[in-house]
Length: 319
Ligand code: TXA
Ligand code: MG
Image (cartoon, rainbow, N blue to C red; front, side, top):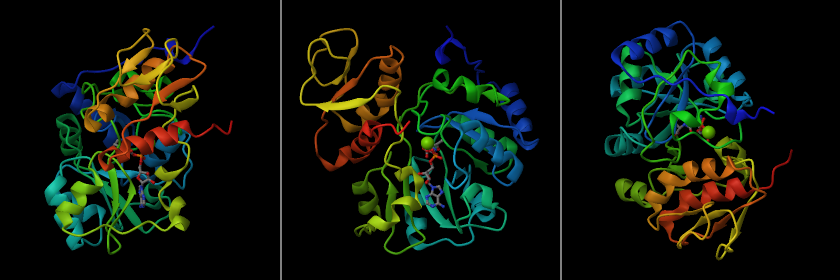
């Protein structure tokens, strides 16, 4: 029997030649998987509706789930957004390039396919030399969601890219393991006060410190505004359950000394935990366990993004 993990994904080193081939493919409307510091993305020319539609097809992603547009310098913002707010200015200057996505009014150049019909667009400047060089060579902003199938784990290494995605792209560029390992923080700066739509690589505390004021609260009725807020998301195939302490024969993530080879000792620092989380879940999931058990991480605010992803991964599957 063949399982998904049997098909090897062909990955390419980011040589100057490969980067040029990838940039040319993007300009022809094809897709490329690229590394970022958060997770691997599946990229297309953000100004080409037909190319963007192919991303949705490759991921099996609902068309109303908007994409993040990636830029390599501030000048490109003019092509992507039609307004720029004080909060956007402060946050972009402080955290770009980096794992922060800003939601602002979109420009005419960004088609509705990218934004799922919204009048706003999500934009970020990734902190990865391969992504920055690819965007620069192509000379266009790149729409790129995480390179996983809808509702699955995001790839934090080139080898994690889903084979069904890899076969639909011109190239999978290898940029090594992702330094942050969790998706970017999405902040809506089109409203005042700004608010977090998805916790991620930059913490709430860091954002509030940069702004010098508290962020707004997201009204519960707005939960579907940012589809990163679907209840179940970022999930391994195996169900995930929280426990106080791993049983000796359990498969899972803990903080103590592993008692079998399918227990992974996670770091007690939230950034280090985040950086290894998806890779750890990918590794355990490959063994098709009945359940992946997870010891509760600390409740401190710096753990917000880790809690968010674990909670979403633990949400029971509807299929
Ligand atoms: O770290 C990341 O952000 C990665 C890398 C590849 O950059 N990308 C990523 O993309 O996580 P994706 O498509 O998996 O998540 C995009 C998130 C979703 O939560 C989506 O709802 C939100 O951004 N988003 C995009 N456009 C939006 C908009 N106009 N308004 C509100 N939320 C938006
Ligand atoms: Mg995603």
